[in-house]
Image 1 (cartoon, helix red, strand yellow):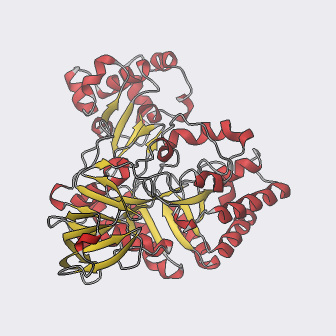
Image 2: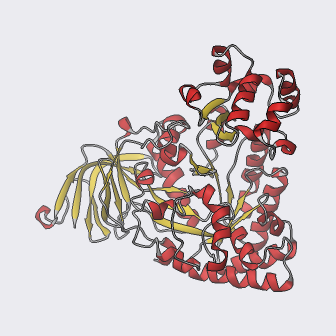
Image 3: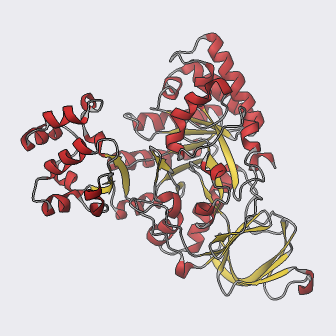
Length: 511
């Protein structure tokens, strides 16, 4: 279907000028961008769409999507398209769903599925090519895929230290994955067994030589690194040495001073790389399993054993006092979910208010939750204030992104990252939105992108007045609003916040 967009606002991200106009789409491509009237007769088009003064923008990138499985379970990609996301970068955090041999499928399912949403799917692929073939023109959004180091490593051996045979197997699997359509390597500085390869100079050199030959991207996950500054310095040095583009992945600002130091290092040294981006969720809180508050020595104990140790609130306080959370921080935690019926009414309420209503200490409240609902209690954990996060986003290379899931639970940024960023951190500047979420990632991944004559039509109609995302940790699957139209490779995939059933999303490394 050929169609014409009229009465839209177009933005030049360089000059930041806004001008009225429209675009003509024939087949998959933009054939004309006009100001007054299109040169092609209106009766040529199957449909004319009045934008009613809304912004016509290039589609956004989610540079840290965790939809590796969810995109197959829900190919409409409604959670992404409703935010204006037309490109999802998957294969993150050193673990994904390919390459996975049939003999190791169960192992990888147990390791990867909880962080990927855990949809009940039969994995009908083994190689990266076969997996990407399940996505290409079968989902509504475009995809880019990092080859996951941890997944590949487990395919080669279950031993932490790879033998020379294991290293040869890893080299073969990685090079084949790049040839199959991966755009780079995702590796973790802390997640086993990927962190073992990260600390092994011989293994790392072998992988990065392949990456250099394939002109790929190095994506380093530093989510819970205990030596974050050293890891970032190492990642930049490696990117410089091997001439690579660098993606620093999963900043969790548990230590604000470390984040500030890290970003300062990257800002000073970014010219040493072929390009650098850093992703972070625009949410000021994170999801935390309440049991993770306990000392590691107690996390494998039964709820009855914990109840005995915590028989008195003084014992609870003593045991928890050695953690990184003081009493005030514990009180600030909000209950996200509990399987206990009598606690459902407290979901979204701080532990301080719960304990006040129940006339007990916050330690007694925690004890009650741990001993009756040990594995199912999640809390919302504040990690950074909005003003500091706003300063972080002022760096041109810092990009808002989703984080997907935590132990199988949806996180709200999967549904509301872009409007949350727009309304809180972009100052309502549409040109900033284009730069952060379209121009910068497209340049980094070397993707031809934008609203230009001859390019494939991948754009959205954005109503800035109604662009909101209201998903929360207690209600994470609430769709964003404000995207009137999403066009993917020339076909309308979303209209008035409803999917059309179009499946024209491409694996961009294949086209």
